[in-house]
Image (cartoon, rainbow, N blue to C red; front, side, top):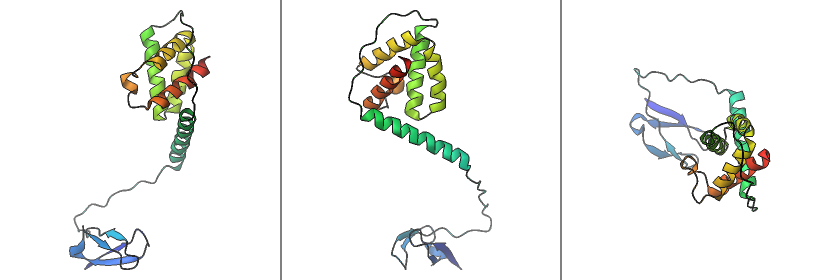
Length: 167
C-alpha cells in the first residue's frame, strides 16, 4: 500500500511508499520539497474540524487593520507632546487613574479597541488627572512595567493620541 497526498506547491497528486511516511522528499513534477505524511492507521481517531466563523474572522481582520493604521500614524509622527497643566480634583484615587491609563495603553497596543474605548470613557470622567498622569508617563525615561514590551515610539504616539482625545 502507498501514501497518496498532494504537493503543496503544484497541487499534483503524489504517491509514496509507506516507509517514506514522516520524511521529506521532492515532488517529481515541480521538485518542491514536500513532507510525506504518515500512513493512516486503523485505530487512529479522525480529527473533528469546525468551520471558520467568517464574521468573527472579518471583525478581527478589521481590528488588526485599524491597529496597524494607528501604529503607522504614530510611527510617522515627529511632534513631541507639550507638558500639560498640573493640578486637578479627582473623584477617584490617583492609583485608579494610573491603572486606567496603563490599561488603556495596553489595550490599544494589543488591538483590543472595544475594551480600550470602554476604558477611555472612565478616563474621560477624570480628564485633568488623566492628562497629568499621561504627561508624566510621556516624560518618564522608562515605561511602566506593564508597557515595557511596547516600542517607545508607539507608546509615545498612543499617549499623544489619547491626550489629544481627552483635551
